[in-house]
Image: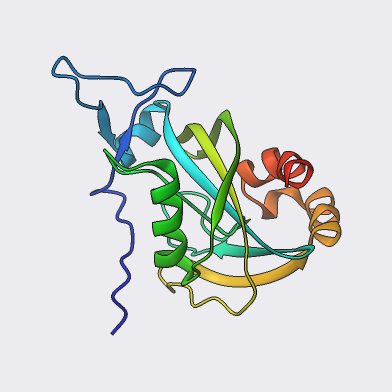
Length: 184
């Protein structure tokens, strides 16, 4: 039996942050959080992580499952998630890469960026995103409920595909790929 878990939009909480990525705090000093679905409906700025796993010049992509509540069916980077309250971005990235793709490798944070975009009818991403990169070779074992397909793709070919058909790819991948490739 697969013991990895699927993130549930209704159960996960995201950590709200200011424009500089500092946690917003409650009066008692705890992190201010919102349910993931509510945060995306409101467009509230929150902490996120994006992971890019490479095998030389190839990037491991996934096509998000069609049933995802936003951006379903789109190709994206290796995986994304939100740190849980009290969890570091690196711990969240490592956890979710294993849970979602069955991949374990060392990750290094490259940079952070903020983006705000409508990603569905009433769904908005407003994320302070920590971008991580890792190196790994092999065949992932993704969770079918989360990942419809996966593939290794040469970065030159990926750039050409995004140029030809940008709507097949997630907003965040299109807006940070060049920076990822330059920074790694």
